[in-house]
Length: 277
Image (cartoon, rainbow, N blue to C red; front, top):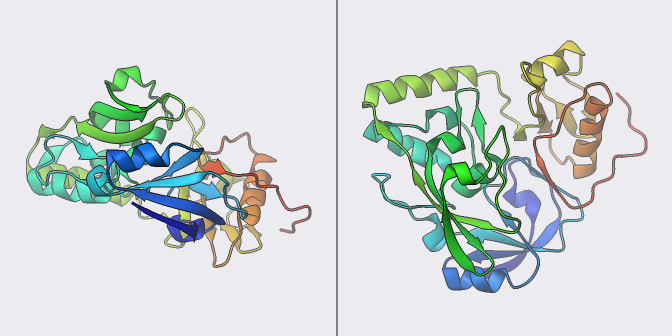
């Protein structure tokens, strides 16, 4: 186990966030020790906006046995495993079930917690079993017991996803690669600058990005934070953006559109008092 005080900006895909005490745990004994005080669990740092002041809780990262997985994708897969690596393996093996998650830069545990996905599929679709560490013990759950819905789950409060078993079906290498290519083609308009992924949930029957574009908000900036020109549902870091700037941009969008934030927000963030378009 490693313990260090680190700026969370280094550990988030958007490159924003103050300091916290980071516990990198590799065994169940490590996890038990790390959860003896208030904590948060950090996956790959996507879909997350952290306060400029950081957070007072311990931040737990899963490594070691919690990141292990069999290259043939059988058996248990650690919650610290990266989805892109699993997608590569599934394409090589011709196993179908993960294609709709292509391009999501998440760890398995984070993808389970938020039921990550695209219009082509979501994490819950690919799950057979989920193992959680909760109240000092490990328990296994079927997906239907965890209240999955659009970008949402109902995991027990304070639980930590430790491992999963996937529900994959043989489909052939060409079929799996063809579906991945379809999902990849739909992502071509996404920005390359630092972001945390889609900032807002899509309203029923609508696309948040289209609504933002229709209101002429692409390119709107607050400091070094900007609504992407490529895709209206991406807020990007132009370099050196703060959480306050990002949050102010969120609030400016919400002042015009009734959109629910998709990102998880850690810590207290207040919008800037005065901003200009």
